[in-house]
Length: 88
Image 1: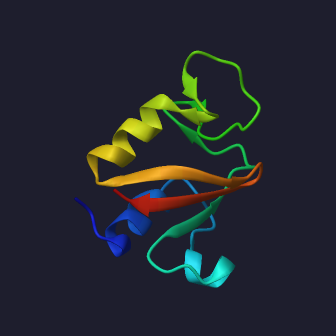
Image 2: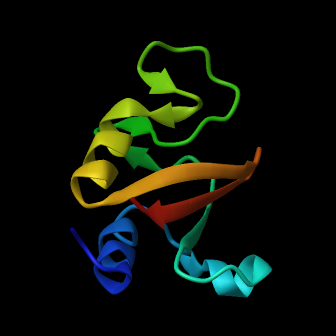
C-alpha cells in the first residue's frame, strides 16, 4: 500500500494538478484531482463521468482503478468534474 505522498507522486505522472482534500473541503487524508481533463492511462481517458463504455465503471477507467486499488486507494466522484482519491 502506498501512503498519501507516494500516491501523489504516482498520480502526478498523469495529472498536472494534484492537491490535498483538506484544501478542497477540509476532509483530511485524501487526494483531490480533476475529473474534467483529458488525462490518459494506457492511452485511454482516465475519468469520464458521462461515459457508457464497458471499459469504465461509474465513469472511471477500470484499468486505472485496478492500479489504484492495488496501491491501496480508490476513486470517488465528488461531482461531475471533481474526483477524490481515498485510502482503502
